[in-house]
Image (cartoon, rainbow, N blue to C red):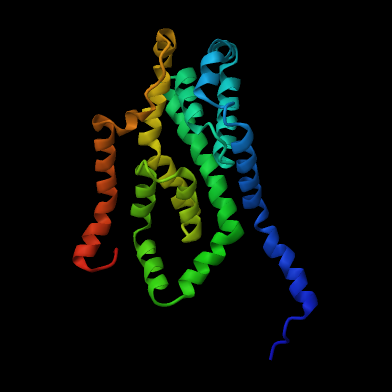
Length: 249
């Protein structure tokens, strides 16, 4: 028979458990500080006021400008700082639709992966394991998610109403593999990223006219309908299995 853990053993195991929460707690802390202090810094107005300096720097140091831009964008997403939309517009404004959309999507995917890994390491693995060993409704929900992971991942990326931070947490909690998360994130955010990057690419004319960009363009029929079509396509495997009453082969 194994010996019961002593008080010393318990106290030694606690720091390791709490230590796993440090990366995610750091993300939340920086996000809170950023929300309180950076609300007006990373914005459309900042881009408009500094557009000439940004263009001059890009023209003089294109590769470095791209690397700096991607690094800043990764930090914005990884720490959920305000200004993600302004950063996406900046990517289009400085680098055009292409490679701007590639820079935007790559940076957003890296930042999202950082949140996913911090959440999974901190508490996601434990929650996923508890759901896997549970019974009843919780177990059925976990099995249903596991059978439709690809569809679920693409849906939460394609639906414009799902907050980006939440879309990074859910996969960590239900035990989605890292490779599957990265692939679905990169591909799933391309439609929305392309829309806002194209808006950014047209900011030169907007600045000249003294207007503001239409950030609600993604909800216009010619944009939202194709995205909803992709959502329906992503949900199709779930519907087929529901109609057949079977599991994915």
